[in-house]
Image 1 (tube, helix red, strand yellow):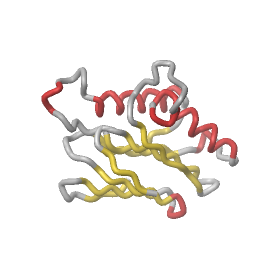
Image 2 (tube, one colour):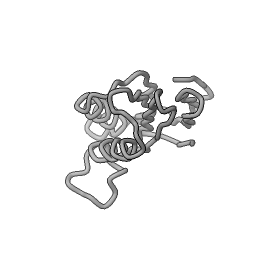
Image 3 (tube, one colour):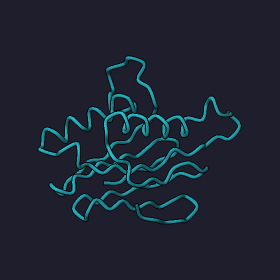
Image 4 (cartoon, helix red, strand yellow):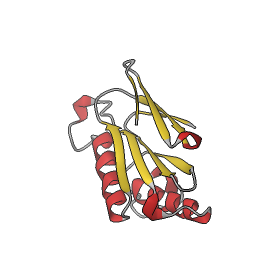
Length: 137
């Protein structure tokens, strides 16, 4: 699975016992009560992803979370409109509330990222940044 990210967050959840996982592309921090696109918002996407993983037998207590993205793509908007930072903070907050361990992250900066998730390869996450830097989480 691959996702291209700017200010959005790519969240992967990996269950090492079942050797499976899932990834979601979170675009905004809060749904504001909207229910039409739950995968779009941090406050609704993460519980939905957990529900889907629970349905296939994953255990919330052993899930490993990794996040990437959250860039500030437009520096002149100031901090109120820094969607990348707000997305990052909300994803961290929801994971903490749900008791899910955040094991690694590559967030912030001013460049986009492409993320590839390999659940069959130990939950490895490869990141290729628009500035040419590559890394693994």
